[in-house]
Length: 468
Image (cartoon, rainbow, N blue to C red; front, side):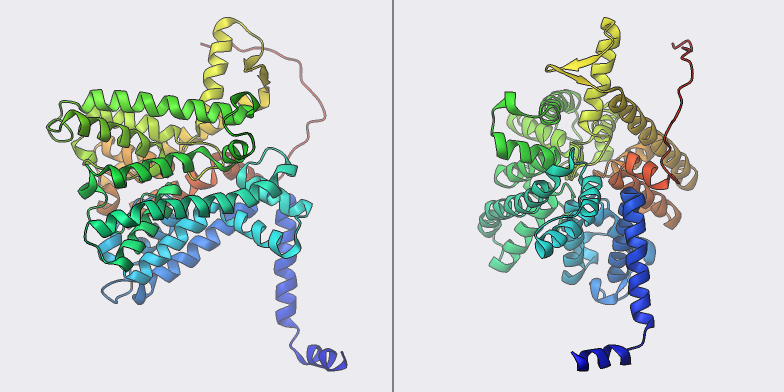
């Protein structure tokens, strides 16, 4: 003890002061605004991956990658988007691809989720502050659910990715790849698919496997399950398929996701059925496969079997709409989320019927939830509109390509018309910001930027303006 005290007295005091200052800052931010802490941590992690990808060892050529390309790739990986400005297979070395894969895994789980899990493993319990941080990161409904949800997040993610990798690896072996190469590609695709990232280790992506259901089916299933969200997975693991015991969130998420999947497949297939540049010359079976695959991919996964530029304008508009909606809340998918769409649709139905309350499955949706839904949609649309204006001025490209790329970035989808690679550095910074905003979420961003939360101690008299 005496020796330790002497040693501590001999150490310089400034490192200790720095550690204490950082700890106090984190405590202050976590207590005042967990959302702001989420922004800070995500930004710091993205910068760390950016600097790593700038290293010469990360590229095949052995030369340092330009900062704007490294930043774009890091943001795309951590925000599980899949947009790229350089070829993942051709530009990056194995080390660079490994860094990208780690970024996808970390971004999919959520930086704060991992931090909370580490705290849980060390202390065997989460404090109130830790639960608040985790609740903000995963949109958990109640603080009591966070500890269980954290365990499910890591166990479900790893289990799903292992199953996907085991399903894909034999096929890559059969196609002639060596064992290490098959394992690497299977692992890469499994993590990328489940986290809805859309990165591929092949220069041609999944196009060479457009008729290979052994590869396409696991990718679709993994991406769809990943887009449901961890709160839904927790409900399914606890209650199974007993629909009556599901939470309202789980019911709406699964139902709307399936409805969008079916509707997207039918409409996308009908629009492209006779297009010779996409699926017009294929057999009926291949057309159906492409239609279902395209519908799943627009929900945030981002792999593509056809050239996005070759689609009809109406199909691009449909894809824009599906991408903007995205997947489930607290999932690896992006967009405004399917529950947001469901709440707004139910509000419209209630208004049309003249009902005072918005009701579904014997439950009333609070007014505050509808205000949040409106805020998410309006802020998302505003971000897209501003980014589109900037990119139109920067690139001079047509509106359909710019809008497609912008929504793909905001919704963290990863489908691309190739515009990302063609943009100058300023345009790449704009899309990087869109991916960041889309990942942290419109409401999280608004809460983090707010100086303080206001408590209203009074209520003004009501007066209705004329609407419509």
